[in-house]
Image 1: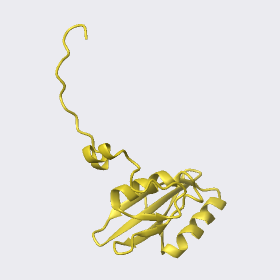
Image 2: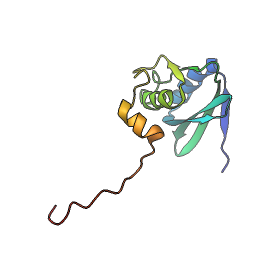
Image 3: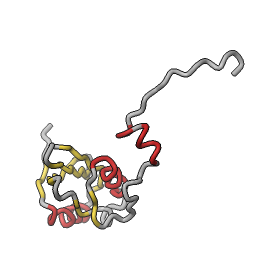
Length: 127
């Protein structure tokens, strides 16, 4: 299966996303890949069980990206998560948690949502 994607620049993002919405595409999610000196933001859409993808390369020196939450409201979740995990800022976010999407204690204990399990002592019989 080929991973077909359309490469974009920032100025094209919202118009391309709006065009997909107008064609009936559903926003699935967004992925972020750290490439060292830049990030790739991969936007995933579905129509009739066929996926299409948009790729936006963001250089680390300019981490401000237009939000698509005005087009697909649900995008605010992954955009806020990406802000917390990668330091990318989404301009025009419908609901911006300002880098505090997760509770502070959770981020310190479990960065990137990786959980550790500690062996608990047995409470004994009848507990």
